[in-house]
Amino acid sequence: MSAACRPLAGIRVVDLTTVVVGPACTLRLSDFGAEVIKVEPRGGDVLRSLGGPSPAGRHAGSYLHLNRGKRAVGLDLKRPAARAVLGRLIATSDVLVANMRPEALARLGLDAATLRAGQPGLVHCTITGFGPDGPYRGRPAYDSVVQGVSGIAGLAERRDGRPAYAPLLLADHVTGEIAASAILAALVARGRTGAGATLEVPMHETMAAFVLAEHLGPRSFDPPLGPAGDARVLNPDNRPLATADGWISLTANTDAQVHAFLRAVGRAELIEDPRLATVADRFRHVDLWFRVRAEALAERTTAEWLAIFAAADVPAMPCHTLETLERDPHLAAVGLIGTGDHPTEGRVRTLRPTILHDGATAPAGRPAPPPGFDTRAVLAELGFPETESAALIAGGAAFDGE
Image 1 (cartoon, helix red, strand yellow):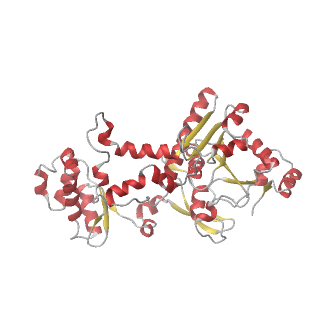
Image 2 (image 1 turned 90 degrees about the vertical axis):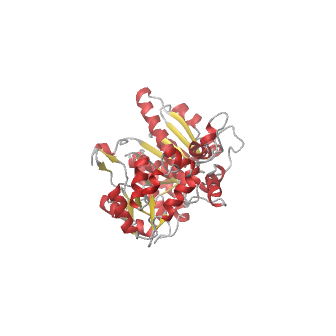
């Protein structure tokens, strides 16, 4: 494998995160070549079961995909001996990522002030629900809670008349990726200065900024030029278009794309319609533009329209279901979905990293291991003799696979 596929090789990350937002962050670091050591309590990350069934009952599919390539160490951090082990592990590491509440971190002596006092080069990143100084600080937060309070669910109310969550853990994944980018920036700065960083990535502020960047719109000016909300995105007809036998996802934004679309669907006369002539005209008359799009495709099949739009260079693709997405020919050609062997689950399907470095992609790495699978190996690397490792495990401070 090219070294370019592993730009974080040699970086060790202590992962104290659970569920989705934190594991999404550390997955990205693992994909870039970092050694990610996931520290779990007895019983493991709740996502192992919360994410659905598995043959052995402890490795839900979503857990496998978010934690591939990581090492698993089992520690009961309520025990002083376990906290001592974790302290030695952190001392050998470059990055710590946690999504516990700040108060819980402080009680364990894992807050940034404590750790960086003795290890100033550490990049300490916490992912929280709500940032400091605001009235929501310290409240529990999950993806659906954040989708509601940040305005994401309310966008559906503007469009459809009732609020709705995006049917994927959007806030978790986006915030996790942003946390990973903040860590990468801190590591670059550390390479220049030697100093680490104290990072906090609050989910509410992060996702509210996403919503407002797109939808504050005319209210970005003083005085406002109109109500908030992108009329195109919030239009009820801004959805996949029905064909004779299915659905197509299509967007035509530029004048050239719109003209090509209108010619392709046999409505070339509308090219001269002053309501649709330019980008600004179509923004003002978005209801008409989307109605024209929605009414145009009923007479031909999805395959026929896709061929027509491809020839006309109109951006259009199939609107996949979860079932058809797995059979997408492009994903098959680029090898996104593979298979691997798991210690307890047998053959499992894997997802490889999607970023290309110098034209190459990194492999998926080993499937996510059982809780504590790497405990003995990591303890040995930290200098614990086998007798001490055995005593830690026998005493309950550590465990080595359940």
